[in-house]
Image (cartoon, rainbow, N blue to C red; front, side, top):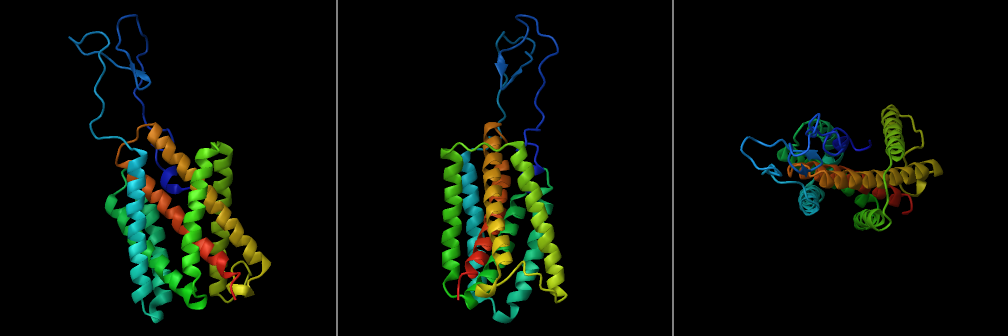
Length: 278
């Protein structure tokens, strides 16, 4: 119930339509149970006949990893080009424009019944511009911070995945609701803060560098924690999709969802690191 990319998908939420078992089953009439339901025998088929599996392929964990790596690679390349060649005068327009386009793209692509590969890669390219622009902004003020933020992001993601697997973390419905409400609340507060800051009002929720107050640091710590919690929910959704033998095309939805969370995690880590730099 957190990441809208997974939340809107029947496949990852276990709401996909399943074939129904026959209303009544007399001994010797129906085929052997397959995939949790009884198959109807066709005329002339022997008892125990199993219907063929779909030929389109199913989603696997290796496939999700490969597509996530490809999507993150597009983000990295786009960010690197933006970081190296974007003129300083265009840094803030690129930052704001890519953020708005990326946000719209997330909801457009997530709302599609079948995630378009082009839409996922377009989002990755646009989000790369955003990542490159904000990285250049922070690197200009605090040299060396970007490398630390990138390393910390992948360490945090790797540690989260390891904890999820080795400690057998189980995502409950209450946990999903808590993360969703907390994430939506934080997003609403930050949106209001953005409008107030444009009007010249400083709420103290967002700061930069060593001048940030305790409120800014607390908000950043909360945001990093929520990003990690969202990543755990993403892993749970992927595990559900693999277990339910989702179509192979849904691997792109999984890669899309993880990429969105990873970008958010990186930005929050970048921000919180800046609070402890002189």
